[in-house]
Length: 179
Figure 1 (spheres, rainbow, N blue to C red):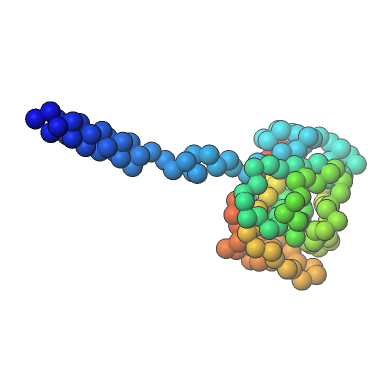
Figure 2 (cartoon, helix red, strand yellow):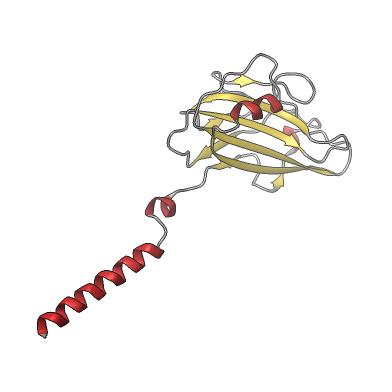
């Protein structure tokens, strides 16, 4: 009987351990960190300083990201204002940034990147310049699992089409500007 009790206790212990393991989240899921996009110019949800708008120098803000998923081959960035009277206006399209890139310095674009066409029909940055009211400016960074090639003159819609099915993770930074 003593052996039977030990065996029953051992079986109960194994069943208890298996039950705990079955209900626990996998270690890899628990340890994953979300891709994060930040700027030294403003906090997420904060006000974009005048220097980065049409009422100032009109320069692009510094951006940085961390917690890049493994397998990232490239990055793409789209900045847009969804609050315009004519619909969403795209201010900046940057694609083809190398996997090793972790920031964009102020008023620049990575040398290895493709500068897409913004809503004004020009490549590069167009600073926030709302006609009235406070607008939201959404910077969306995409970590891509496959490289994309874009034709000259590609806009945000072309970038979105090219990256479809290739996005490993995305990060958003929101700035506000206007009166």
